Length: 191
Image (tube, rainbow, N blue to C red; front, side, top):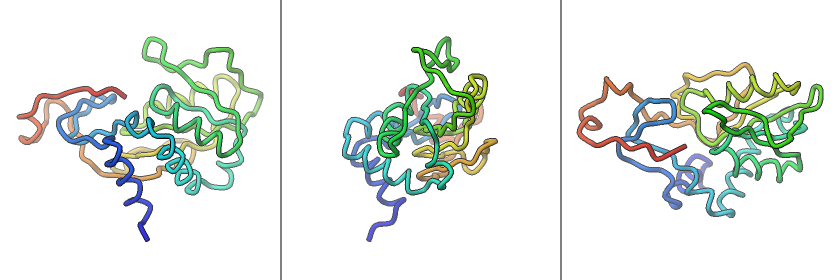
């Protein structure tokens, strides 16, 4: 029987979502690996399976959320599928001038319990931003879940977080690249 991490990596590889090269991450860091989750999100059977696996890793408290919220763009598809499987309301935060905002008439009730779902984190900036924005609108962030945590164990939040898979692909500052990346033109595939 295949273990969870192997299954998740196989899904990413089969869908062409795990890329190798020289990439500029949304965080500004550089890496030889990139998760283009949009590739895996084209196939709803794979999204359904990833959401099942992600939900199975959540605590009972996280599953008891009132609403699932996802930062746009990366978390939209997986967030909506997690909400569907949990039978919860789904909302999203979108970028306005590169800052997350709650728009489109979405409202949060007083003390509404929110599960944040993201695709990939490196430093966790969008999750932190989502936590702050949800609090500012009266919601209570109770947990965050993500498909991939590539922070090498360096990211922590004020709420519990549940990565489906944690991978330690190293990241680098642009002025401190290893020779194998320095010789490859950097690309920014989008997040």
